[in-house]
Image 1: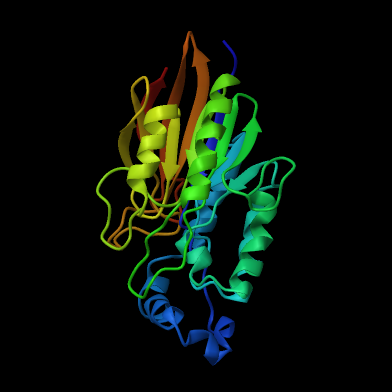
Image 2: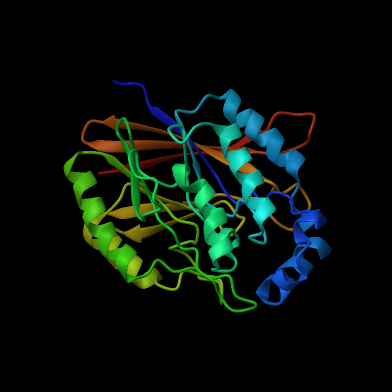
Length: 302
């Protein structure tokens, strides 16, 4: 039996936004004004860089074969935020070692400036030879095909929903089919949850269409962020249920109204004629203690 392929899943980092990032008043004559009120009034007291650093140190010490980041690195889509997010990704590893996708906060406003900022992540959001931010992208690592999707769209004030769109969905079926033919374990990553109860004005708008693609072509595992909760659901696949797992925000401390920050560790290997996927959850407890391993589950896929 070969050694399992180990990878980490982290999400919703929400790196700090500073007053110095907000020097252009005209940048706030839109939805960003209310998002800034939320960040400086409440959310900066929930998301803490020191917790992120603590968990990242633990993750890197475990030496995973790959790291998957499912969006919301930043908060307001301001120029200074993108540069710091790129520095943070580079601290995790090279694009060969790390795969990322955008979340709704990474494209809070769909402007040229935001697109240019998001393009800084392009090496982490492309295939091995394609850094053009074409979604879905496929990054093959040994027996794994990481399939990255983007649900990042501009939404009205008070909304945080996501959408894949017709073009991306059309390509996804072919990508899943090809990876299946190559006998790869297909790990699909998107920011918004594609299963479970959909949050009003905050869910995946084309969830039914996505579910229909999975029902036809299948996948071995679907991972997401956005909810700031570790969760487990499933979507019907052609040969059985496909696990859908979410991970809590990386940067939240205990007692903040959400699950404390964590990272998920997966170990994937082929056993007989199916994929066996082992999950361990590493959850933050205190700055003086290593994260607690609080859950373990085995997922089997034909």
